Image 1 (cartoon, rainbow, N blue to C red):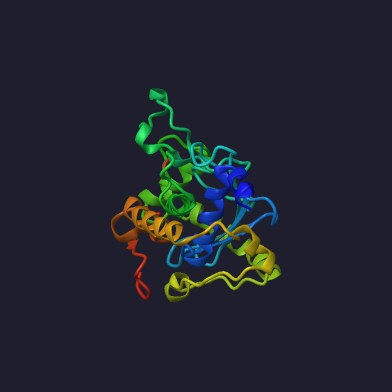
Image 2: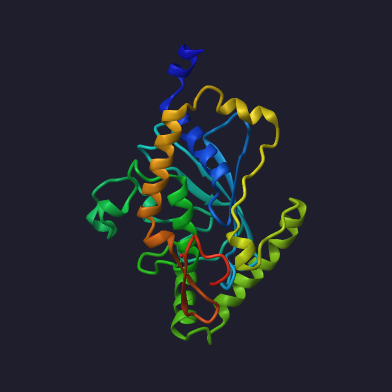
Length: 262
């Protein structure tokens, strides 16, 4: 048994640990599953649109594909749901600094410190993506037309409604898929901020973790979680652009009041 564990690639061990952590302590507004139970390198993500934003009530699906040398190389994040956004390509790929390889490229306008590094993980990616949805980077957009439209909406403080209307139509179009999946999309902050453990679809999921975790590893995982929260901002705070173009900051421990770069 020990020999089998030693033969397991380090990337699989890292992904096992992250999946377990995200199931026990989910990121608010996300649901994580494996595309196939036996494949740790392909995850499906369901994103719930944050309340009090243009995305409220939305149910957006995406895939995260991990390289075999994860966490030394970044994964890719691709939306399956059609998205109109300055930093999302037509094929659904997300253009964000945290997912760019850690190379020094002065032409990109990005600092190496803004790019991927092995201390990042799925939790910080998810927080960065939800932040990106609500606060796009319009300096080097993946979708120029969406970027121009977003700036008009933002600068007019919501009076130019073209961008907002497209987003709301996309949100409404996701309702049917949520219903097919048997998912109730949270529409209030109280519902959105509740953290619950996602039950395993069957007992075979436990095989992923069999023999992998001991007390030392659990303690190490807790320490990593603490450092992750520090890295994503003050007290886990995330800023949201509301429908009128104003900005609101939401904290992880905030339950009844109430988003990175291309």
